[in-house]
Image (cartoon, rainbow, N blue to C red; front, side):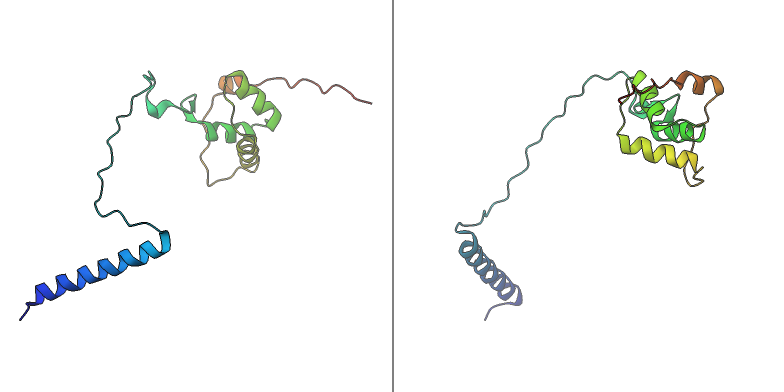
Length: 134
């Protein structure tokens, strides 16, 4: 007479065999029976000198909070694009539009950068006048 453990092991083997048959019918090949260990890949750093915490920050604040503050102080999307472009930063147009709008509406659920007047003035850029067409 078989023990309870032997009967359970036998049932598991039959279930695995049935699953393998079903897999073969569906995919036309046998399933892999042994599990392979994933290869360990070492990531090489790019040698950045800045801390990760400082990346994406301007005047010590996140880019989004600076953009919202720019909106609060009357910047347009075009002015913000030029100001950040002057600094070599190219955020998505949608990001600028949403941030400026949240600044204009003074969205209380978001954080704003506490920029000084000098810092805001350093961001101000004159938008070139559009050249007339007709």
